Amino acid sequence: MLGTMHAWQAVSRGHDVVQVEREQQARGASVRNFGLVWVGGRAPGEELATARRARELWEEIGRQVGGIGFRANGSLTALRTPAEVAVAEEVVARPDAADRGLKFLTPDEVRAVNPALSGAMVAALHCERDAAVEPRVAQPALRQHLLATGRYTWLPGREVRTLLPHGVRDDHGDVHEADLVLLCTGAALGGLVREVAGEVPVRRVRLQMMQTDPLAERLTTSVADGDSFRYYPAYRGDALDALNRNQPQPAVAAEHKMQLLMVQRLDGSLTIGDTHEYDEPFTFDVDSAPYEHLVEVAESLLGRPLPPIRRRWAGVYAQHTDPAAVVHRDRIADNAWLVTGPGGRGMTCSPAIAERTATEAGL
Ligand SMILES: Cc1cc2nc3c(=O)[nH]c(=O)nc-3n(C[C@H](O)[C@H](O)[C@H](O)COP(=O)(O)OP(=O)(O)OC[C@H]3O[C@@H](n4cnc5c(N)ncnc54)[C@H](O)[C@@H]3O)c2cc1C
Image (cartoon, rainbow, N blue to C red; front, side):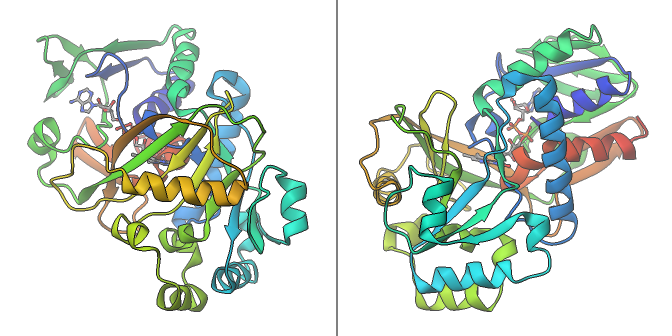
C-alpha cells in the first residue's frame, strides 16, 4: 500500500510511474491487515497529525475509487471493568479528545450507535474519526484507477535487485529507467535493502488474524476491547498504569500480547485479531490458543455465537524502532529513497506518508 500510495501521489502530480512488485499480486502486510484507518489511538504530535491527514486523504481517494470500500464507520472500544472506564474517562477529558473524535458512551448510547453489540459491557469509547477500507481489494482498485490515467505501469512478478544511477534492474535483467526510485519494500529488509541501506532501524512484528463467515447482522462500527488501550500510545496515563497494574490480561492474551479488534467486511464477514510476536525467528504456523481467546471475547461483546471461522492467517509488518518516528524515510542515494517501517499504523497513514515523501522529494 505504501508503494501504491506513492504511485498515486506521483501520478497525481503529473509524473509517469512504473511500480515493480516481486509477487504476482501483493502478498504483504497490506492485504493481511484489518483495513482499519485508526486515528483515535495515535500518539499526540506528528503521529496524530499524520493519521488525521491520512484519514482525509483516504476519504478523498475513496470518493474517486469506490472499490477501496472506504467508510467512515467509526469505532467503539467496549469497556467492561471500572479500570477500563477510568482510562476512557481520562482520555475524553484531555484537550485533544475532539481532534481524535473521542466520546464516552453509556450502554444505551452504545446500542443506539451499534445495535449488534448486545453483549456485556458497562460503557464504550466512541471514536467517530476511525474508518475502514477493504484491504484485499483496495490495491487492485487503486491500480485500475491509476492505469486509466495512462501514466502508470504495473509490473508484477519482478524483484528489484539493483539500484542504478538512473533507475533499477530487476531479476529478469531488465532495466527500468527513472529519475527517482522509491523503495517501499515492507518487511523485506534483507537482500536489496541491506545492500543499498545497510542495517536499518526497523524491526519486524508478526500478528495472527482470522475471518468468519458473514454475520447475519450489520456491525455499524469497528470494535475493540479494553485490552487495546495497552497497545495505543494515546491512552497512556495514570489510569492505564493502574489498569496494567491491577487488571492483568488472561494468561493467553498476556503471552501473545493480544487485543481484540473486529471489523465487518463489506460481505458481512468479520475480520478479527490480533496477537503480537516481536522476537525472531517467528513461528511459521498459527497457534490455536489465541483464536479461542478472540472467539470468546468477540462472542461476549456481540452477545451471540460467531459465525464459523472461514480462514486464519498471519502477517508481518515492519516498524521503526524509535516509537516517535512515523516511518523510516531515508534518502539512500541522489536518486533514491527507502520508505518502510510504518508499523501497525501503515494502512492508516500510507496516503499521508506518501504525500510527505512527494513533498520532500520535490515531486
Ligand atoms: C495482520 C496485520 C494487521 C494490521 N492491521 C492494520 C490496520 O488495520 N491498520 C493499519 O493502519 N495498519 C495495519 N497493519 C500495518 C499495515 O498493514 C502495514 O504497516 C502496511 O501494510 C505496510 O505497507 P507496505 O507497503 O510498507 O508493506 P507490504 O504491504 O508488506 O508491501 C511491501 C511490498 O514490497 C514487495 N517487495 C519487497 N521487496 C521487493 C523487491 N526487491 N522488489 C519488488 N517488490 C518487493 C513485497 O512483495 C510487498 O508486496 C497491520 C499489519 C498486519 C501484518
